[in-house]
Length: 415
Image 1 (tube, helix red, strand yellow):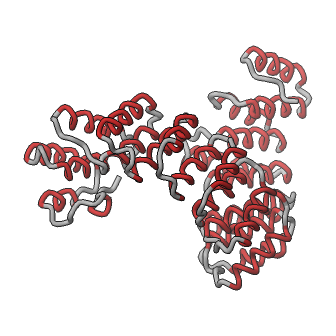
Image 2: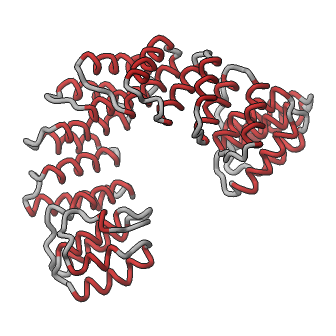
């Protein structure tokens, strides 16, 4: 985790200790400096807040909460800059009890009317699944700006309560592009693609200009729902606003065309991209596999390898089904070896299920069994792939035996 002066909340940059903190580039460097600064500046709240925030940005934010406790025990009174990063830390560790205790401190200090604390409280309760508490914080405060509304809408959609999110969104007095993006992406994530597209059209009628995130989300919704008409309209808008150089948007366009079975248009866009990244390759290869163009998928993957372009697990999830259908055991084995070398600790059960299916369909049932036995824990999909593979190879007794083992392991039957 890189810590720099840019991560400081709002203290003056001329503060004598901030220069020392700005030199930190790792947690190992921060810890001794933290100890030295706290020792030499024990009552300096700016430094306490800066270091708490730095810890909150690390992969494991427990030290931020521990430092806050030490701060209280040292009779240092926190202020409104202290709490937002603490609530974010509590949300990341699913620390409901810790967050409630800190909320109590906020109430004690009379800081509930601070806008940043108010929003961070709503987000905290929403992220730990306590939506009723999030709503209570929202309802009991006079602070009803777009940010607090959006925080609660986000909480609703992330917990699958899309109707509540839409109702609250409709109550918003002012809706900016961020709040529109929140509700549109929330519907899309909950597989309500048509509703997401309708919201996008409503957004345009309201005169709100979509940004990159809006376009990427709606193009994905068009891809998943097969709504080529809206996808084409968005492409026209992209061309008009000269956004064709935005790789993230172009990748989404390629994906939309491929999934809408317009492979020629998808490939034309793909070929025109000069700065392809792994996502560009993945959406085109995945598009071919999605539309059962397995030969084209494998051909493009070979080209990717010849150009020494980096592949990842998503690439293989598109290529392995193509290998299975084309009987391309050599490529499948290469992918298996590559995964073993570059992703030795992968827990992607979908990837191992695809390997089992590929080996079985390519005729190497023993290799399929080896992969299956290496998967821990097994998923329902991996059991199904192995049982299906054994049945395909006319090893009925083994298939039945494995089925019985699946029942003993408590796996539910797939309809």
